[in-house]
Length: 170
Image 1 (spheres, helix red, strand yellow):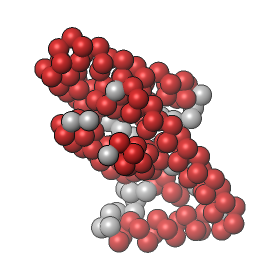
Image 2 (cartoon, one colour):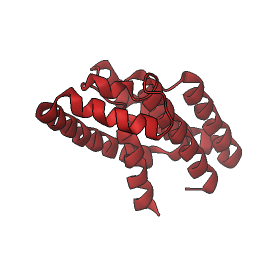
Image 3 (cartoon, rainbow, N blue to C red):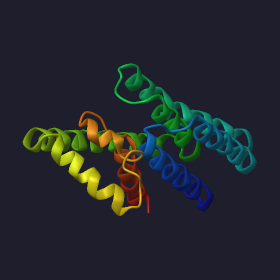
């Protein structure tokens, strides 16, 4: 993977991570701009073949997660994010990221169930109360998802998945 592809993917994931944790939303302007940038980059770098690679990668990232979204497993922003990721990194890498993200999400879900059953919402709220001020965040705006004890931002699973895949590629 080229430096430009790695850098663009890293920036996309960092911004998506922050916005997903803060507001549980991945903005369309983020995913659409990175999606378009991927097509421009691949067209400039490899012409029609690059456009085809970006389109197939985008479809590989988008379609499987669209099915998961329709089953109410993840949000629409996550689907579009993986479409943009696929346009940048191609089929193999985006499918690997997807696989690891789903595995990490399952592990996080199990941990949340165990913690919530053992300690109730007090533990989750306590972690939020410690993390938010320590990072200089307003508790009312940050980590609101932690108080619910029911759902979590998918980016908590996507970030370690991306790190796992990048460590295997390097």
